[in-house]
Image (cartoon, rainbow, N blue to C red; front, top):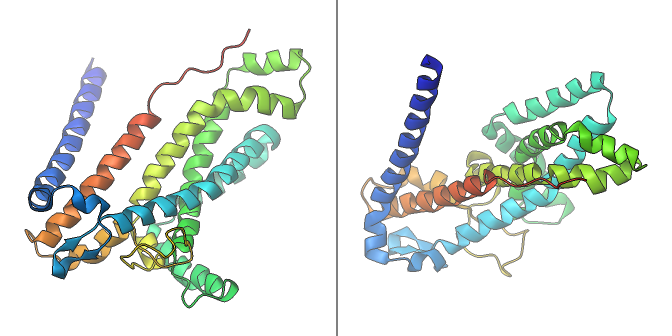
Length: 283
């Protein structure tokens, strides 16, 4: 009885904290939206000392960085999960899982330092750039940071497939490749999809590592799809400017509005990720 009460209490506290955080951000950003409306969401210029607050460069930068990260981490994480669960002997799986856990446990600031020391010089020399700071650098770094999330959750998805599906596939005479493509991946896909959305939420929230390598230039790259240009993300903007913004000022309120937009985006991704999905039926 006490366990049930404790669980209910924990859920209530968690929900109250979420409402409190979102409410605080909404209240802090209300003066900004009251003065400027919603037009800054699509504005392209961010000059706080001239009262220009355009969110679009940072929104575009965040989108590009996470898309690059997903394009790399999703196939790599899924491949690692498939190999570790389906192909490796049991005694080697623990070694793979240990490596994944180590990657997950490395602080983001350490990733940022490694990005400055190793990634930026490599990009600068190999791509003939004036500076390695770029959207590509942010995306590459984020791909390593979200890789453990995708791998671990994909492993769980494959482990959770009912044995009856494998038995049915064997009875039909399917080889391993056919089982993987026709049975295992379709069954695991809802969980893999949720893993990708949760990893996206985590990647959007990364601050220090991204801030150290993205360049923090508040303008839209020319052309807008130029991934080799230094840019800005929502988190890097907040990280760089919050220390110099006076509490209650327009800049401070604008940064809180950035935080609100980011929080709502991550919340939406989490809600979608936790939406139940039906698995493929078998006959």
